[in-house]
View 1 (tube, rainbow, N blue to C red):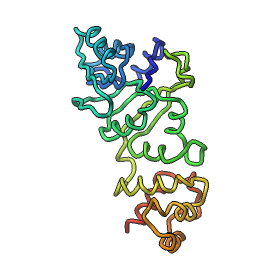
View 2 (cartoon, one colour):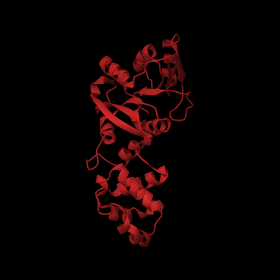
View 3 (cartoon, rainbow, N blue to C red):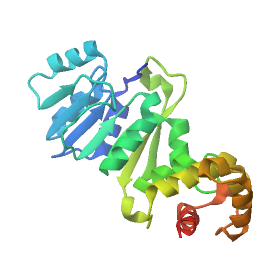
View 4 (cartoon, one colour):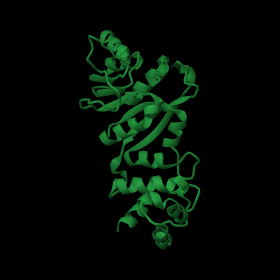
Length: 247
């Protein structure tokens, strides 16, 4: 899995500042050559890094042997890490979904460098082109804020696309979701037909909801927000539909 290492000191400084790491136990996923790690060990109480590449992990251990740093030479997310208070990372772009899932469960404030297209999806509003299931899923756990664009030239090797610093504020209590799995199942199904009205998307995605065509047709007009476009549904409205289905 290819990694793109941050080489820009101002970007590294902005990322670590966003992480508010002072007196915290910090996790870094995909530490690479240690450009971010170097600043983290200066400012944080302690740092745990996860690095899959054995050579890079060994280099981190040697470089920071006198600092409060623990190196986990393992493939994320199949790794056990000690408790931490925050995450500051430039993870491999291919692991973005796994990182969001991992941090969402732990509800810790985080500052991440993500591919800009992905960052724009996380912060999109209902009705916008990039708004979708990933947005809704992320909003269950966090209030995401896009802080700044990171040009591709800030990386080595260059990824060919720009990135962005995203700050994630834990906020799982924001929505009154009675059954998270029901919500996610429904959201994923509806957003496969996000340009359609809820009533039509519900029928078209019936196989994802374990419904026959007749069963879906029988209840589609009773669904809350049945005449709304899926793309325009707020998280609270998706939750209403999910709650209605479970009653």
